[in-house]
Image (cartoon, rainbow, N blue to C red; front, side, top):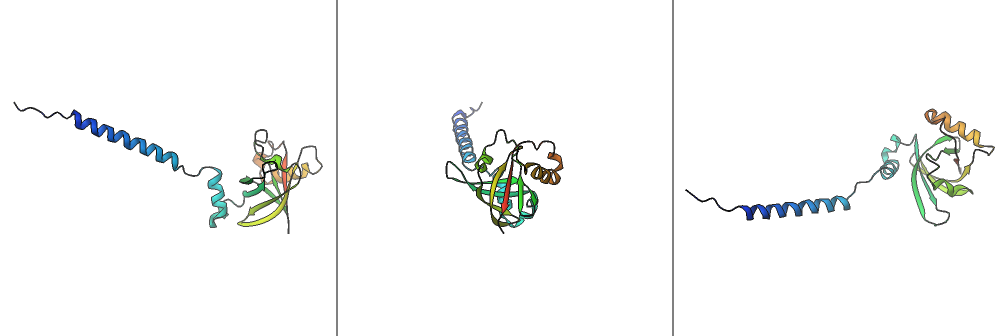
Length: 158
């Protein structure tokens, strides 16, 4: 009867190499995270394919009031002439819109082009709030009932 070779050592080496390979793949995945959420929307708005999203979203650029840092984020908007109305969804939790309690300069990418403007917050007690809410509700009837909090109105410069 022929003796079978001892393969436990070979199997141990293969298992160790396999484990090392899995560790390398996990590390590579952590380092190479694909862009998610806002980054994808911003990339589309900046590309030639901006027409896919330009009717509903704009790129909003502004400087933080306390940090002085530049911020860029996509927001859903409704347009009325040279004014854009933005409803900060989840406004109770989000804080970006508070930068515009006093009118601040902003840059907006609308239909693939950059425009300068001034943004300010309208609270439900303000006189123009109803008009701005109506503009937003007309464009986005699904959200009409939920638009209760502050609105950001962006006045574009000609």
